[in-house]
Image (cartoon, rainbow, N blue to C red; front, top):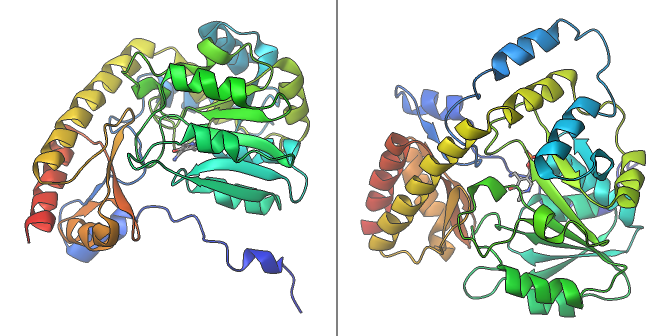
Length: 359
Ligand code: PMP
């Protein structure tokens, strides 16, 4: 007898980066380095641990299900009304809820590929159909082909900007054209998990630029620049009617009391976040140049990671890095994504990359 859906048998599982403690133990070294999950490497922001400790005193109570204080804080920062914001247990949970709120079985979700590996899993979980549009030769979204892939069954089209794992981004002129071409009954999702790391002025802020469009929704996270990956907090910005519908299928109480308190504290630290992002950006550009000098055609990244399109060499490259205590993220047969760490961590990665690429 089968107790679970047969169609899930062949679904690739989400593969998190290798466990840091395991590799450290295996290699018998002081400490391995993990550059595989796109966190910003500088620890919790000032004040966050204290806010968490204080919130713990009420941890026997349910959290505010509406995240009212946090949504008000976000609303003020983003210049939108709070009824346009929904919070979730990471933006990946919001993406999942969004599919629940928009897709019936067999409805289509168009996205670029390769992109964030959670999209196919989320689509399959809701019995929606993934329509993957191949990236351009420069590893970015082919927006024209994505618009052309829309059918009467398409409910969502996801633009990951900047794109995970390639770091590429789409600029305003092409996004304007794309948004104008998408039918008004298809929801355009701008997944902006890495927005705070964007330095190219032509890459638009989805909330500020397209927030008033009825069929645009922006996904953001507090896992990256805001340093809360371990506490799980993401949010979306949409039109009030869309936000209300999505809120109805949210898992009750799924953003914890602690995560809400931490997020409010983190949002009070914007100058420090900017300072940290600037450090990461400087390192991103340094690592990009250094890997290019080793002969790899690294696309310019607007995020906190770089993409090495090594094809069949991806897994062997990652193995050499691991043997030298640096965990990176290979996508078999395609490429390797390397998160930008501290300058010392990046130096360790570059030393390993040199060995891997010159042997
Ligand atoms: N979107 C993109 C493009 C991502 O890279 C990630 C994290 N890897 C997420 C969403 C999810 O982030 P979280 O669930 O931690 O908010």
